Length: 466
Image (tube, rainbow, N blue to C red):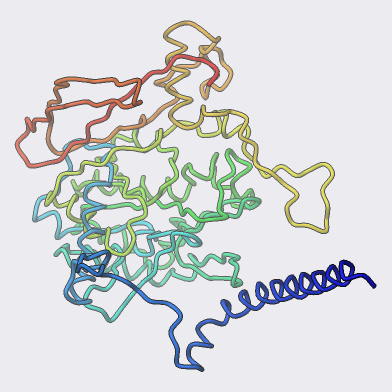
């Protein structure tokens, strides 16, 4: 055998051994890294080191809390939650009934089971977590109003407490079935079921509940709609429970039981000289044109999902401790199902569905960017310009030519205040090279009470292929 061939074999053997050791090292490193903590505990070693200071004493990174104790942290969270509701709740209607006087805050009747069991967060995803026994316990509406010194109608409260079994909803979650007493959103393939007690159920529980409002004549009616991961409102009558027969044309519209409750408050107001205020405990834009049109309803306040501390802020708005400054982030349409996004929405099954897998459907978004306010504002523009056949009856909720005022109850960016403002655009700079727009605006409070305002800057872009 030649030395050359022998040398080749040696190198092949070394190469093979090296490759094997490399493969073993890679595998071992992966295993060791996965059990790093356990190995360190067993051997008493450390495999990581947190460096917060450089050799020259420079502070590279050391987290410094703004709070000196857990108590301070909890109160800080409570303060943020309260201010978010104060500045984020949107006053949609007000005939001068709000803010309430000090005397009126002592005569509150909370109506609607959602006044007592509100939606404070998502049922799955962005969930509300209640905490008790701390220096800053989370509160519901009743707890927050009482903490702010409001006087509540106990007769009506006791009635709703007795009716509590009627509100129970079951939601299928990853961990199994979860029960809630607040209103819940249906699954993508489900339908919305109203949980509001009927007038007959309320009368049957306590026939004197309406009489109790004579001395508690500031009637606050809460209408709620939940929001959740894996929760959807299918538009139109297809999205509501057909067995309830509640004259509900959309899951985000009123049911007869909700409608009757508002009208009961309006009727009581005619006799007791009080006020009727509707709170919308929701994040999905609802169909509320009939509430806006109801002259017996004095005010509408959209409060969103207030979390653990937001109802403190709602109470502050009602009492006038602060002036509302929130503005809508979507358009409140007269009829949701008329929008193209609603027409395209649905849990659409594949024609060639495979039963062995769970993903056999899709949600279509054929309307492209023209969803929400962008659809309504763009169609309005086209109607004014007489282009695109935008004034046709297609998508009209009235059956007549499409008209913006007939289709929109409250537009994107809408929101009222207890005071008035004057805004002056001082200058506007459009920098196309750096793709920035800078506006300097002077805002002046021209009213008689303190308040905050929102500066809104809009741009209209030409149609083109982007």
